[in-house]
Length: 208
Ligand code: 5GP
Image (tube, rainbow, N blue to C red; front, side):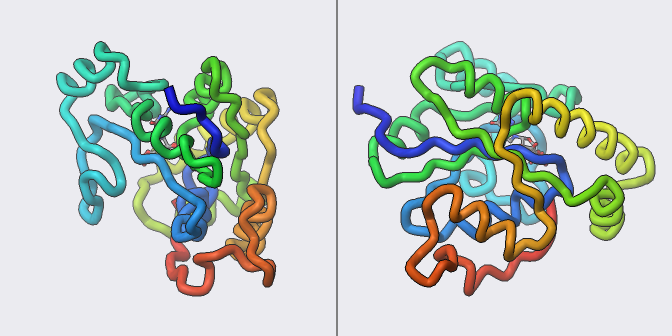
């Protein structure tokens, strides 16, 4: 087997923490590759199969699982929809010693990856500046009703505690620019001018 010479980075954070926007800022850096998970949840409007996720039905997911193709899987929201990350993608990416391979998974997935022999990932957790600000962000995006907002806030508190207990490196996302810089610096991705590659033309400002 080709040795895994690149850097494996696992990033988690509550919904509304801005982790997807942060990862999007780093995506165009030549050393960065972002993993694409497999999921059984339905595709949302603007999502593209093979770009955001590999969308499969439950039967196919379970067959892939039986074939040993997943590093870890989880029913992230306990709603029956499964998510899993692929060995094939990771092994190919990490055969390049310069590659920084970013996996965005929930905290349970991060813990499972940390326990997987031979991976030794770095675990980063994106934290909102406060629960009040997280609540404001969730309300601003207008995708959730009151019940969903309350559920997401409860889940966020639990995830923050779980991430601390798991020894995650915490990044507070107070401003997208500053948090991107800190994240890029932590991963050794800053260019000579201190700006992470990809930031000048990054246009997304939404938080997910
Ligand atoms: P979405 O909003 O895309 O349905 O849900 C995303 C949630 O699932 C996020 O918390 C994300 O970190 C998590 N997730 C995405 N892919 C995986 C995966 O392969 N494994 C695990 N454990 N969690 C995943």
